[in-house]
Image (tube, rainbow, N blue to C red; front, side, top):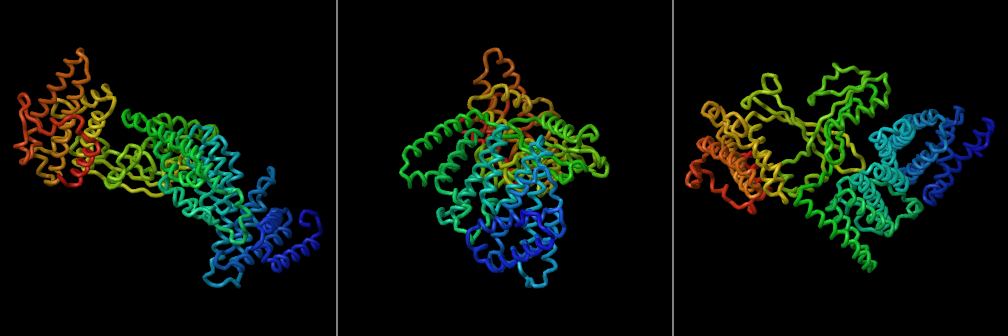
Length: 638
């Protein structure tokens, strides 16, 4: 009857009848099949978008009654069924508008939200008002995202954010959430973003596992996916369970469905070169294969793992796997709308340079905003003075960032892959001096580090994630020196350990470390060990710097030994020159970096001396052990 054009009087009688129907048949509507509640939600919300104010008013009143009746029937669970079915109804309704305005529907949602404020019969402390506000907010999110998709179809990050907001709004309706996650998967596959496609797929698998847990068909739900990504349990665990329906909406979620999703995810992880994650997916698949006595699938799965770990071994030897480059991107200006003053971490392909992402975003937003809105790139990486920027311009600040780990985190993440997977903290540096200049000599050069924390972990179902926390700390000049020496040493150690060796890279690093000039190369930092400056520093800081220097001399000696074994005869003179410079550098540095307990641990080497540690074989040099030594020296241990 609501489909037929009627007089205002008849329509009023129809809505009166509906209110009586909702009250008298509440058991059937909210405990029986969800289909009836779904039909009623759709028709009433359709009337909420009517051009006639009287129709909208009646519809708002009827929908509020539905929520309240559902809530009274399930006091502990709230109005879950109404929540789920209203979300589905608005999604369907938006698709039927075909370009028509949704302004009246938005007004109706605001009216419904106000009803709860004026309802004096709601008991103090009831969760009902909060749940109503949450539902109205979710329905508005659906309307906003759907209408914006067309406007942002050429902006991949914004388009993905809109898909994400819809998927999130359907967290209480598994099948609709899966629909939008499937759409995100397709977009990622089209763009070649296989890691993100894999995570979309594994999120769907986590969602299905959670549904099966509610149906008592899976013991662990999405909690079993934690080792793949902490994002999965954080997002898929919050699904609402409709107590009033016996699996009416979950009919497609079976164990074979979950197995199929896990298999697809495994293939996507392989395409994204995240081979190590495949073994975690395999751990979830194996119990299903064993229960089904499916030997063929088990064989195929282990065959894939065998191939994957062969690639891992090759990668560990060559070091040639690039799983993404990260940038901090901050937006300023009215053209960006809700993104004004927000900052994100962007994950870009492989070894994307700063110039490449600057060019990409500049082109994207220039096309999007048109010639009337200038797009400016903020060159400074520090704090932006918003007042100095034109508010009607599109201002973008882009900074390269690196994953950030504390010393404890590095102890847990020992492999290269672990340091590129499940990342949520990033850091960038800005040099400064106490006098205000950006650059100065090493005795005045300080460093400001900014650590950014994102809302989720990379890789994720999106390629950009919002920054939710920022902290800064400063390094004193000697701390800057210690860290710079540590990096140089780590780079040398990595090259010595690399198989096959990269001779050009090794020689470039040696050139940067071996120098006869007192104020160049690594000798530049020895100024802190001079009598003039050492008196201003603590004994712990001096000890740290000496320890790092000795580690670097050790690494230089190993690097020279490796270089000598790799070069051809036409580079012998070049090698002898570097070796000579190294010996002269040792002669200069030894009096400064020698430790009293180390005097007896010296061996003759030509006309100079060097620590016996530098005579160790290449095979015995462990880069992770070296890293641990350097970190312990920074923390004060020697």
